[in-house]
Length: 95
Length: 482
Figure (cartoon, rainbow over the protein chains, first blue to last red):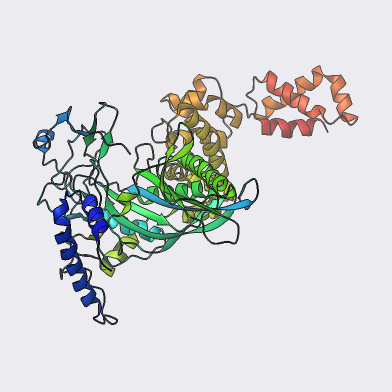
C-alpha cells in the first residue's frame, strides 16, 4: 500500500487540516515512510500472540454514579466566541 | 405468514436489521460527573469532558458498566471480560471532542438473542453485539437563519448500542423486536425506553432480495424515534428499493433520513465522506476488565424477565397466552396485576385490567402510574363483586367515578344505593309478582317458547332497578318455571 496525493488530501479534509500545495510532497513522503515501517512490522509472525489491546498493563478505574454540577453555564460558556440564551452559537450546519 | 413485497414483476423478500440506541438511566454521564436530568437549562449539565476541554480525562461510570452487563445477560448474550474503548472520529458542532468514545472491535457484550412473538408465532432474533458509547449534544437549527444553537447537556450521556442480526423479514417483526427489547430494558431498569424523549431510538437497515438469492445492498435509515415511524419508514424504503431494482437500477449504499410528515425517506448527502471514522483505541482509557465474580453477582440480581413472567402468570393464575402476553408487555401493568390479584381470582382481575382499566387509561391518556388507579382501589371494588354485594355490571358502571373519587368502595356504593339484591326470599317474591303479571307468557314458555326466559329475567331486573343478583335470578327463575 502506498499513499498518493489524493489520499493526503482526503485525510487532511477528514481531519479538517489545511495543507498548502508545497507541503503535499513532504507529507506523501513522510506518510509512505510510516507505512513502509508498518509493512516491515507485518513480517513478524504473530500467530501465537494474543492481540495487545492496550499499552497499559492495567484495567480501567471506575467511579460511582454520583452526579455533581461542577460547572455552571457561565463557566462552560466562558470561552465561546458567540452565545445566545445559554446556547453555543455556531455557523449553521444542517444534515 | 411470509411477508413479501409485491413489485410489478416479482415478489421480493425484505431483510431488516436494527441498531437500537438506548440511553442508560444513570444519574451522571458515562465518563463525567455531570448530571443527566432531562429538560434542564441549556449547557447547565456539562463537565469538562463533555465539552471537549483539552486535558480533561474520562473516568467510567461503574453503574453504566453494570447496566450494560445486566442488559447483555438478559439478551442471552456473552459478556466479554475484556473490552476496549475507541475513538470514532468525525466533525460536527454537537461533538466538541471531535470524536465519540465508543467501542469498535472489542465491545462489552457479544452475541445473544431475544424471542419475539408475531401473531402467536415465536421467532428468535439474533443480537450481534452491545457496546457502550457517549451520546452527542443537541443542535437547534430553527432559532436563527445563519446559525445553529448547541446544547451539550446530552453530550457524554451513556448509550448502549444494541445491534441485531439481519433476522427480521417484515415491518411487524421489526416493530415487535423493538417492543420486546424496550420491554426487557424496562424490566431490568437499564433504560426507561422513552422514545418521545429520544431515550430509545433506532437505525434501521433495509435491503430487499429475490427469495433465495444473495443479500441486496442496504440503506440505513437513521434515528427513527417511534415504533409507528419504524414501520412506515421500512414500508416506504422497501418499496422504493423494489421500484429501483425492477426498473433496472441498482441500490446505492447510503444513509437516509425518515421524514414523518411526508412518510418518506431521503438521502443524507454528504454523510458518506464522513463515514470514514478512523477508529483507534482511546489512549486515555485502559481496557475495561471484568471479573467472573462481578458478572455472577450481577446475574443474581436480574429480575424476572417478561418471557418468564408470562409463563408463570399462565400457570399460576390459569391465564391464556393472549392475556398473559398483554399483561407482561408493560412492566407497570404486570406489577399492578400481580399486586391486585393477590388473594383474588386471576381471570377476573385479568379481565378487569385488560378491559376497564385499559380503556380508562386510554381515555385519560395516562399510564397506570400517573393515574389514580391503585391495586387497593381496584381490589376493593372487585371484592364487592366477588362476594356478590354488587354485580359485575354495576361495578363497571361506577368504575370511573369510583376511581376518580377517593372513597372507600363499600361506602361509595352504599351512598349510591348500589348494593346488589342477593336475598333469596326477596328475589323469589319479585319473580313471583312478575310471573303473576304475565300469565300468558308463562303459558307460552311452558308450551316450549323457551326464548321467553330472557324476557322474564329482564322484567325482574327492571322491577329490582338493576339491583337483583343475576345469578340468583336465573337459578330461582328456572326453579319457579318448572
